[in-house]
Image (cartoon, rainbow, N blue to C red):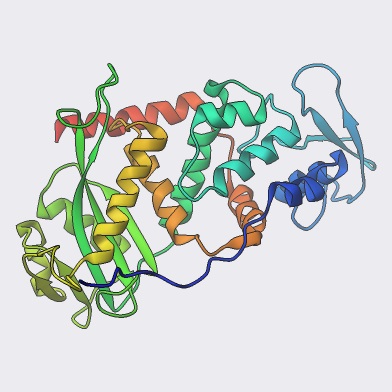
Length: 330
């Protein structure tokens, strides 16, 4: 009987909720957090370059309506304008808590659960979750997968139709998953995921050339899927039928991680529509690749938030609808 393969590297402790409250529980600390996103080098007036300001909290309108007024020229700046938090009606603490709850999870968090935890509606929580997934996707796109060894496969991710139908017979999408490893058939360091328009070589080739470093010294393990045959001219391709009952069979970790991703989507989000699938995959990719971040998670997220721009929910929906229409035509 073969021994079960495990990965023994210990993950660092994550930032606890108690530590989060100790660090950001006061209004001053919350203002400083968002000030650091918008002005990482400290406040500077766009008009006169003064570095001093009066902090004003308007009592009407949105809950977090903090204004910074330049002491020299009097121009006013909203604390959150120009960022992904522009026009948010949540308090500063609710926003920080939402960031923490979403990014710190190993598997994910539903809109219902987040809404309950930050005391808002699941609809509002869902909008923020979608925006946070976009931040994850942008971070993923900044990184090229580079490794000596890769495990490559295509999995079918079950979706859900408008009526809520899931599983067998429901919409399913082919997803290419590639794991980078430092040693052949060993635990992966990083993963890349991509929803395919169709199960054809051209779609896979186009995506891999953009997101994965490949050359003649690269070793790729895969099954006998003919859609990978184009790689024979590019890399050292090891294509063979996999017997999953064999000890130390190929694609072991590929199989484990693919199963984990599918399980997360099914159990936490109860299936995903084709429209939303790319962002869900971006989330799962980001979570795996940042599993060793530990207590530094908020500092990492601040870097993403500094690059963010105002993002209206309607604009996000329009882009996702366009993406879905491409799927339907493929």
